[in-house]
Image (cartoon, rainbow, N blue to C red; front, side):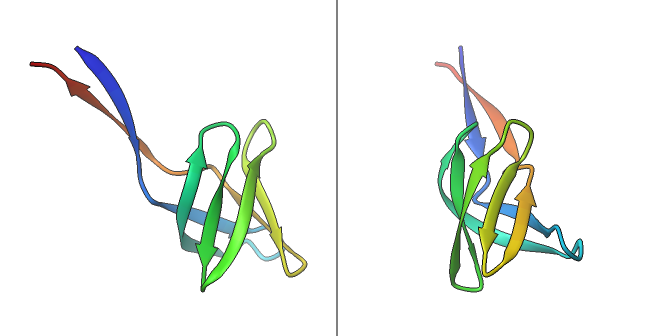
Length: 76
C-alpha cells in the first residue's frame, strides 16, 4: 500500500499588524517552498521561512501555517 498526501485548496492568512484572520484560496503549493494565496482577487506570494509561510502585499505582512493535509492509502 502507498500513501499520498492531499492538501486543501484554502489556508488561513493572519495579518501580523492587527492579528485579523481571513481564509484565502491557494495555487501552486509546494511544501517547504511556498504557494500563491488569492485574497479578494489579489495574489499574495507566500514563501517558507523555515517555520511558517510569509508574504507581503500593499505594506502588510501575512503569515500562514499552510494548508491542512490528509493522508490517503492506495491499494488494490
